[in-house]
Image (cartoon, rainbow, N blue to C red; front, top):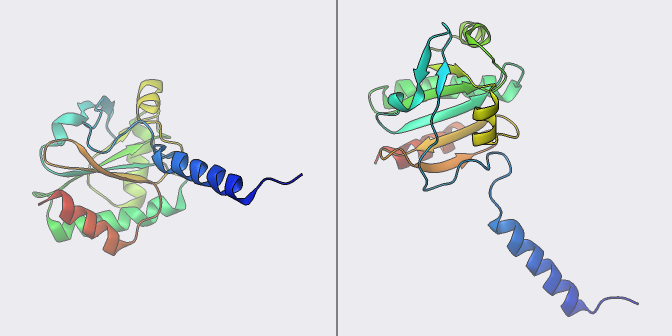
Length: 169
């Protein structure tokens, strides 16, 4: 016995509706339009920094780890974007979800040659709040410290610049 075509279509439409309303699987702890959750985390020198104090203008929070090939490519895009738009207009902040302390962060920054702040984010409270399932993830934050957009995949430079223009308006 086979299902009638109208029942199959209804089930497919229902499933599609459910999938469309589900939060992104790559960063389900952050919701667009909601405040960005902040923590005090260790920087590359082991100094504890309240990340929220660095979000004093539109920002991109970049979730990464040392073993991600695409992540290293995005670092180059972020460096160019910071130069193009100006560090006075956008903040770029990295969270390394593999790093438990500043040593791994320091090594990553040295290897890739970037200067924006990055923090060791491999802690239960951080991982459970952000719910990052894979990297790279970029979170675009507006001047009100609210999540404007979450991108959980490789991003092209043109797309990155479009999203930056949205948050610096």
